[in-house]
Length: 247
Image (cartoon, rainbow, N blue to C red):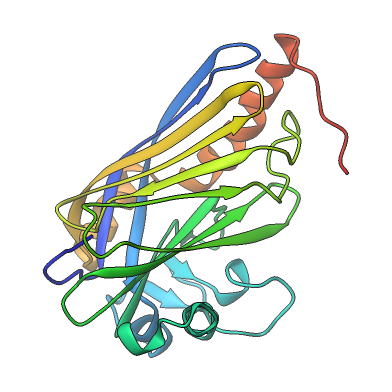
C-alpha cells in the first residue's frame, strides 16, 4: 500500500450505507473529511481556520478521539497504538482522517489513522469506531507492504447499531491517501452479509480558502451525519426491523 508522500488534505465525497439483510435499505450523503498529520495538528500547524482543542470554524479535539476517558492527545493515542503493534521502528508519520468539528460540533462514525514509513508505505491502520451512545472502540490492522490497499478482517466486539448485535466479522478496506481515497466496512454474520458502508472522496488542498468552500457547501454536515443516522434508524424501525437488546 504505497503512496509517494501523503500530505494533509480535504477529501470531499459521498458516504453510502447499504443494508442487505434481513431487509434492503440504502442511504447516501455528501461529506468532507480532513486528513491531517497528528504531530502537526498537536503542534498547532495548519490553516488559520482549523484549530486543535479550541473553538474555530473547523476544529479537531482530542476528547473526540482515542481511548475514551483519558487525557491523551490524538498524537499520543495513535503513536501508542503503533508501539503496541510493534512497528514503531518502521513508522515515521501518522495521519488521521476524520470529520472536523464545524462551529463546535461533530460526530465521527469512523475515524481512520494511517501510519506510514519514510517511503510513504502504510504499515498500520487504526479504525476507530464510534456509536451514538458515546462509546468507541479501535480495531488495529497491520498492512502488507506489497498490497495496493489495506484489507483486514476482525471479529466485531463493539455495539454500533441498535439493529445489530455484537456478533459477526468486519471486513475493513482502505486505499492509500492519494488524489482519491476510499474506505469500506462490511459486516458478515453466520447467516451471511448484513451490511456494507463505504466512502469515496477526491482530494483538495487543506487551506483556509478550501475550508471556506467546504463550509459554504456543507455548513450543516455535523447535523446531517447525526440527524441522518437517527432518521434512517426510524425508517428501518418503521419497516419492521427489530431492535437487538444490548449485552
